[in-house]
Amino acid sequence: MLPDTMISVAQDKIYRLFNIGATGLVAAEFQGDVDVMPASWVCALDLVPAKVTAVIDKTHYTRKLVEQSGYFAIGLPGAGIVKETLYLGSVSKFDEADKIAKSGAKLIKVPDSPIPMVEGCVAWVVFKVIPEFHNEQRYDLFIGEAVAAWADSRVFTDGHWHFEAADDALRTLHYVAGGHFYRIGEAIHVA
Image 1: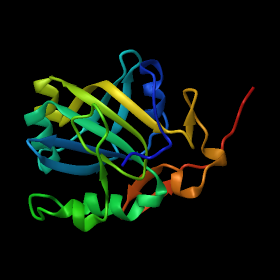
Image 2 (image 1 turned 30 degrees about the vertical axis):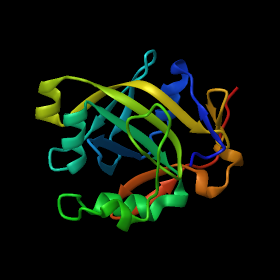
Image 3 (image 1 turned 180 degrees about the horizontal axis):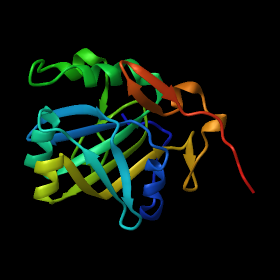
Image 4 (image 1 turned 45 degrees about the vertical axis):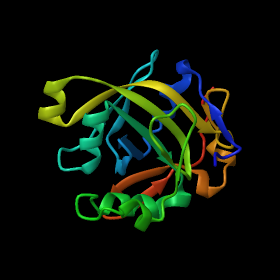
């Protein structure tokens, strides 16, 4: 079931979802096989159409699904699912086939999305891979072009984030190392 607060994000505003440097949950699906992994190295690359770069290491199960399907999704987890996020990054589906279930993360199906999304995120974007074989093989760097995007209206409206009034569970996670995260903080406006 989709959250009532999930709204579409216009193509010319998608890049703003990634300007905050949040940890992303990279999801991929191929023939019913789904995996999700956190990635800190996710970055906006272009405005319209929106593009991102994401580092998806060869050792990750998710990478196999991205390569097979040609698509990936990135969700920006809120602090309310920090334990699930850490678990998804601590266990490989190569070793634990039911890692998503064991993580406690819940998947939601979004209409017109080929990939299930993680509930508890504050934004979700589906990307079609722009093949760059050299970058993918040498640097594990994938480029994706956004095909659809949604955000939680409690923290993102009219193309802007509004975390300063948000519940802590809705503030994005920023991973440092060793299970240590930061939650996005207060706004500072310079006129």
